[in-house]
Image 1: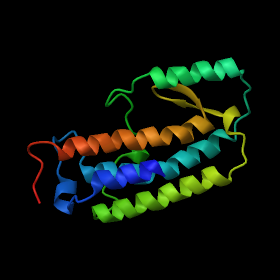
Image 2: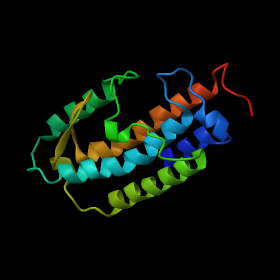
Image 3: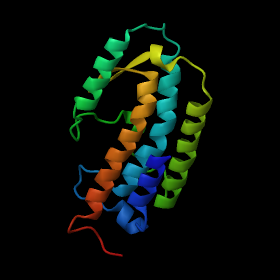
Image 4: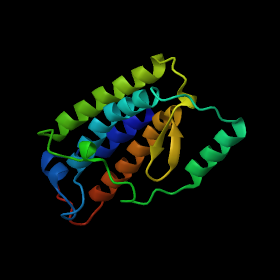
Length: 166
């Protein structure tokens, strides 16, 4: 629930003109970040459900701790983990308000899945391009980091000297 508010704070007061502004041709706009985040939540739950169809893998507490330390200590540099094609912005939303509404709805579905699943999330894995193998629980928990990172990018755009004024 915290990342939902972080996202809302990041886009608060941004006009549609500002949301479409790109700092460079190869950089995403605020609207594109919002679109990416709006579609990423449902994709994450699909990934988790897919991982649950694999055979469970047991690991010791020490192995899990070592993996979690690695995850925490591994920086994910900007651009190192490119979005899959299905999560790249394609102008799915006409306005920032539409993207925000889609994000909030998707986030609620993710939270509902997380609250209600009784699946063994710790025994099913899926690879992450930078962090290595993550269990389904870690994929869900890492979603907050994903949102927070992109909200930092949104704030960075908003602080640029050329960012359009309202």
